[in-house]
Image (tube, rainbow, N blue to C red; front, side, top):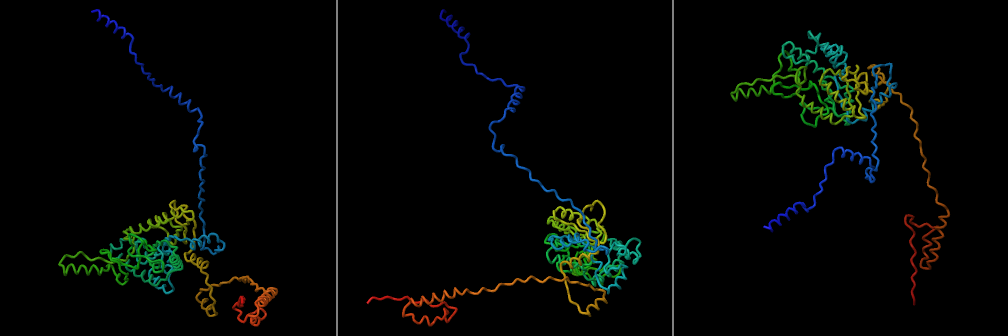
Amino acid sequence: MASDSSLSDLSSELSSIGSLSPVPDYPSPISSQEQDLLNGVSAQIPRKHKLESEEQPAPKKRKRAEPKPRTTEYLDLSSRNKSPCEQQKELDILLKVLRKRRKIVVVAGAGISVSAGSKCFCAVISAIQANTGPVPDFRSSTGLFKSLKSEHKLKASGKQLFDASVYQTDSSTSSFHDMVRSMSKLVTEAKPTAFHDLLSDLGIRGQLLRLYTQNVDGLDIDLPGLGTEIPLNMKGPWPPTIQLHGGLAKMSCAKCNIVANFDAALFNGPEPPPCETCVEADRVRTDHAGKRSHGIGRLRPRMVLYNEHNPDQDAIGSVVSADLRARPDAVIVVGTSMKIPGVRRIVREMCGVVRSRRDGLAIWINRDGPPPGKEFEDCWDLVVKGPCDEVANQFRLSHYPQHKECSTSDIESAKEKGDLQVMVPSPKKPAAQILTPAASPAPKHAELKKKITIKLKVSSDGPEDTKAPTALKAGKSKNPSKAPPKPKSKSTSTK
């Protein structure tokens, strides 16, 4: 019992002492206010060691030159009061584009064909129009829309004969066929104009990226360098000329879409001519196969009328997209009033891409000014007022000067025709002649030195070369082309 009491007393004393192991020191978290205070103090302390990248100054930003503001220049070739010499600056801009640019896009209208033809067209012209030009335009005061209204007694403008509704009545269809026959005869006898020849030159020299023509006469596609494809392919490569409204050179079937050469004799009367391909296919189907007929297609000129679908619409869109990606360096809009919405869109997009280039130029050529409105505001770099052929004449005179001597009979015949031009040649300065100096004579002391050298060699050779002096007279050998023979070395022998 005594031992148990002693143990209990000992354990109570040990328990009162507590644990002998060290108590761990866990730091208490810092409050947010103290942390903000420490961050502020550390930010005020400067860093002693900076990185090398921080010691280098920041690179200066490269200054970009702002594009120069574009201005519109005006060139008047229709006024006789102003000669081209007085407007030499504007004329040089135009001629430089026609000479130097390599990706030119041209959008042409009926204005480039007004002067086509010769005097034999007067009878044909009077039959369909009262226009002064051999090939009519459309929207002028004496154009085709005005003349057709009075000729065919139309209630509205002659534009009705170019609408898809002409096939709804027999009278309108007959009038349309009469107009097509007259235009086909007129176009067949017409000749390309000076501006057509200019476009052909651009195509031959590889400067023409594309020609978008609204003309149905086909005068441009027959020239070298301006060919086209009918129908137009969806994928490239595409021809240099794109017909936006078709042409009178071809006719197509409304059912089988076959394309053939235009035959004006078939289009007579109110009934469209039947397609021979459809007739043959229908005969084989009904007579030999014993099947019912699927109908026979009708032929029509392959030109696009108002309010109808263009069969080459998707292909034309592909060509325009490709040309926009090519970034042309010049666009020339010539001989058009731009009343067609599709043509306006093409011109607007082309001008935007061309003028985005630093050296791009957009040129308007027509008797009238550019179309008004915000759509084409500040869109042109050069506005040329005047006939298209005058531009071609100025280019030909500056680039291809041709001078021909004429006899008295040629001058008299030219006076009768009214086609007389006087060329005054400017005097040319004679070329400077540079005289070539003659060869200087050989000095006498050199010839004397040569004689003495030969005599010394002969005298030092001994009796074996006694004939050498007779072969050499005054230092000259018998054969001047060969050098004198070398003297033989004297051989020594011991006896």
